[in-house]
Image 1 (tube, helix red, strand yellow):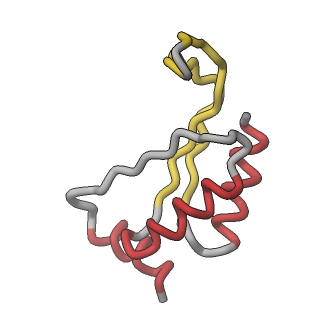
Image 2 (cartoon, rainbow, N blue to C red):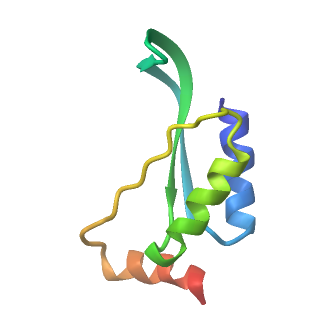
Length: 93
C-alpha cells in the first residue's frame, strides 16, 4: 500500500541507497501465483539509484517489503543525462 511504500522509500532515502522514490498508488495487478489467477489493488514504486548501490538497495527493499515473496525487479538505464547521472552518483560519495 502507499503507506508501506512511503515508509520503505523514506528508509532507503535515509540510508542513502536511493536518490528518489516515485510512488504509484491505485495500481491494478493481474497475476498468476501458486497456480491461481489473482487480481489485487497494489501500490507500485520506482526507486532511483546508482548502479553501484543496486545490490544493496534491492536486498534492503526485500528485507523491508511486507510481502513474503515480493516481486522486485530492476532495469538498468542505458543512458542518463549528465545531471541525472551526477545526482545518482552523488549517493556513492
